[in-house]
Image (tube, rainbow, N blue to C red; front, side):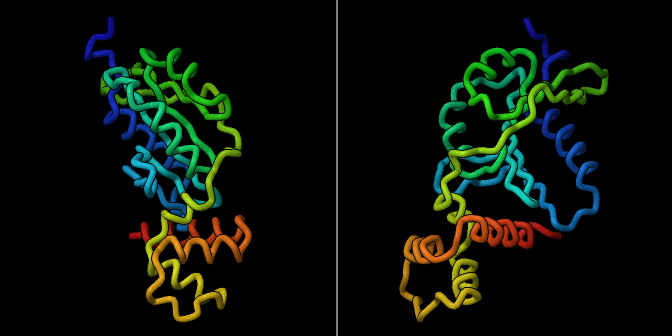
Length: 194
């Protein structure tokens, strides 16, 4: 039985994770750390996203959370992120590890202090996601950002009436995925700088 006193929560895990990420990427202006990051049209939000040379998503599951939404969250994360880590309290560790892909990273949030801040212990580092969907990644951009990219690449030919999906299709059919993902990361970072 987990008492509230010894349980990890989304709030305490998030605070500890963001503190750790801030220390890791201290004053790196080419990195954005974003809470509640919307995963375009997947219907999912990443609890925390780190955007720099890659898109890295973090899903948080405290001891007081349920795992009911995890299967849908897995699909959303897989479509968007280069790497994914789940940060989980001890109560859900076994079931979580059984439910997630084996290439997801796993961190244990262990409540060992009286101040309520859990210690984060990496149990398995994340590997590269081979299921990422470039179209879903590009949907993270706003329409005006797509237009700017197409203009830079000289692919925008008076497409004012084009839908966002039409612009996405023009972009991904004419530019390789690596370059497209670089654009996406650049725009997301600049959008989230103070």
